[in-house]
Image 1: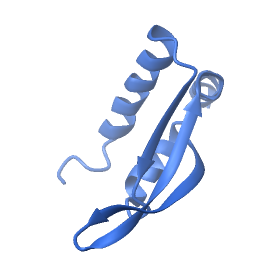
Image 2 (image 1 turned 180 degrees about the vertical axis):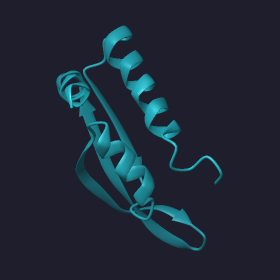
Image 3 (image 1 turned 120 degrees about the vertical axis):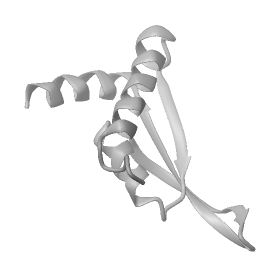
Length: 88
């Protein structure tokens, strides 16, 4: 918790996307996250991921079923998003 809010997660995700899109030539990267993980969703949206859906009751955790938010990013939105953010 001492390192929360310092941008380490954002920087790590940017590196992962850079490798995926620029070196592995991926066209699309997707992820899922629990709706209660607001900090992660914020980071993902900040670097260009979009919410594309929700899987209802897809995970059983702590005695109950949980939903998952589905998010994705493609190479064009990442490339243009990074360029426009760098100009600000």
